[in-house]
Length: 112
Image (cartoon, rainbow, N blue to C red):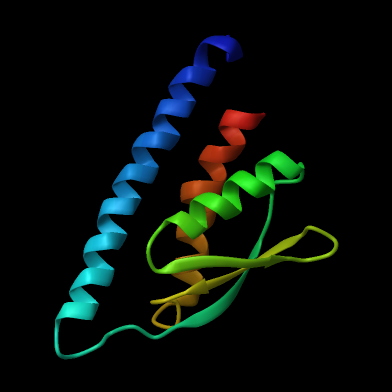
């Protein structure tokens, strides 16, 4: 059954990433093009459920490919991912939740 669901989960990851890419691009472009800047950058430590190198790499890279976020470092014990979020200071907990429930959860479903 899992073998049948893997392609579906992969397509779900791709669709979510493309949606997130479009929404983030619009948000960043709007902030750059309008006279008032709403960006409030913040470094956020995101606890990782991903444990393998492949899971962590995929999660970090997809986060970095999304405009407005950049993966900076993984803790030595591989428990946290340090992310710079362009709009992270507005609601750090929501940003953390969005990244965990969005990208990371979908990456884990594909790789596990």
